[in-house]
Image (tube, rainbow over all chains, first blue to last red; front, side, top):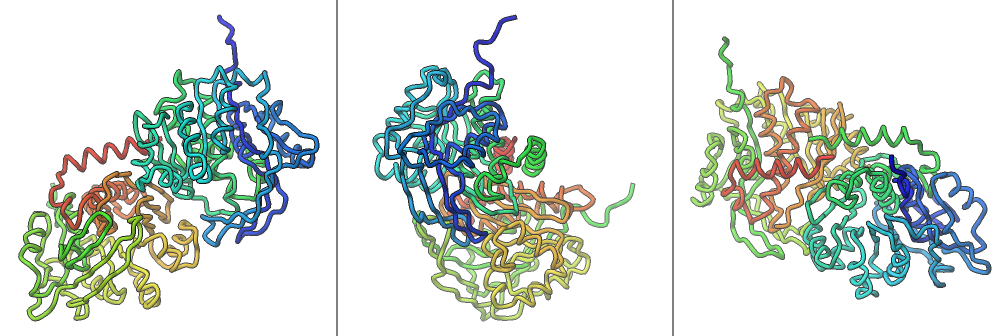
Length: 313
Length: 313
């Protein structure tokens, strides 16, 4: 019997933001609550196995935020930098009546305007890496620290498509997968059809693209096939913030946990997006991470089964 | 061995419009082409078995229109009235750049402003009836002619929700199923969430509601369960006109062809909406019925298999 050099689950890292959000929605208001792409991603991924978090906060980051992150025992916070004299990223957003679109009320970059966090030496052997939304040059720099990676996936957004297109295209040559929203896929490629748009992005380098459609689910366009899945039609919609990051956390967490030889294969990714879809459907049921903090594995398993029954044809 | 009183396939009837459409879209223009809810529905349903068409046109209805309908041998046109001195319904629409919304350029009601068509005596034993979009009082009147019906499904639209709500609510006590668009479900119920909206409609009488979401697929909310399915992600999008009616035609055609004892059961309808989804994905690939006219059963079967593979989880 051979001793594995790394546990199958101990190889997922995520880079991104930890923030303090203030959310206004038709369903209520949440002030100065825990948010950030890295936070939502890690919380979701932690249900599938260990996840290594690389992010920075200021020394104003509240104890309650630390406590909330600590409630997910699978999150390894060795890469969480607390910077003396710096301010934590803050974001305020207001959802419109339909809950599908929102306006940014304010953005206080804080540490995000400083140098990126450092990837701890102990994280550099991570095999799966998720680059949550950030400037693509920063994503590329962070990614290069993971010299042992076998699967790298990036998220992006309209801001970088509009202002850092060349850097984004360079990043696309370094990653295996890209996750972006429906409208962003069109913005990036000029192609309205999401499958056509995703095929254009595949031509830029990645092996797969996941187009997120919010309440309408997602489309996976992979070099080896196309898969479209609806969202879980939850009736309790309180706060969509972080759903995309939770989705990505479920996808990457499931990929890190897979026993498949090739976690980036069409079959692996199509199975993983089901997990992402299911766990994202919980996030929306409460503000901030309130639902994820209370979530249990049996609840996930039960909804997974509901979902499988629902889309069975 | 007993002799069945009616063939399993000979029992689907549809009431609705046959029209002459003029379509403007980013993909081109089609002038004075065959359209109408009854036409698209019947063409789609005819791939699954016989379908009885109840509709009226004026004596200006072109020979090319008749010829196109005749290219679907399973359509029984005994209920197609050609009214001397009357004008055929005409509609002009222009699709916006995103192809998901359109503006009506003109509407010439013609025969639609006259009395409804007569249901032929030979059609009155129809067991499955689809009431394509029309004033709900007209739908109710037509429906009452089908005294042998076991499954009645209606379509509706924003116009009737806004102007004939009481008649629509009366109709809902007479039908087993309702098909309507996402935005119409919200308009009708005041509930943004499509599942919540559909549950409210179930309280008004029907056993199931199908919420159509265009390129995002559909949600079936049935007294016995919920099913959500994506659309087939076709990359060839030329003209969305008639996709909803084609979808309904595929659904009802499949239900008419089912050997299930209860064609309105959750299991029957969930299987049928897959057929509706698949056949609607062809309609969008060309103007008018141009794609359906050329469509073959092997093409449908092949895409059905593609679709099943695509949504497999």
